[in-house]
Length: 65
Image (cartoon, rainbow, N blue to C red; front, side, top):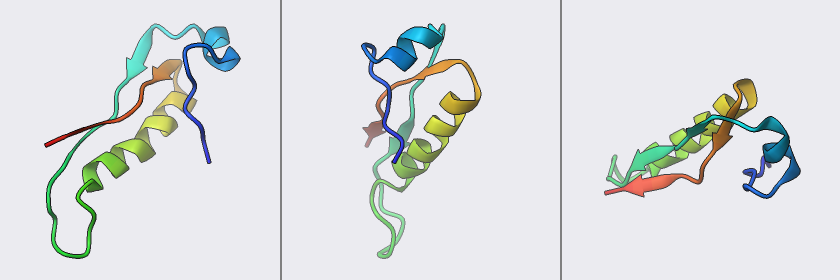
């Protein structure tokens, strides 16, 4: 599992990113078989991929309703 870097972790300090990625998803029903945080889960998949590819800092996700 990929852990999010914190501001005090050495890998984030070494990168010194100038841009941050903030994964945002909505909290809504998409039928009976999907979780309420479907959009947030998708944002949490793309966030680390973007942070691994580009020189950015990954922030914790936010779920909006």
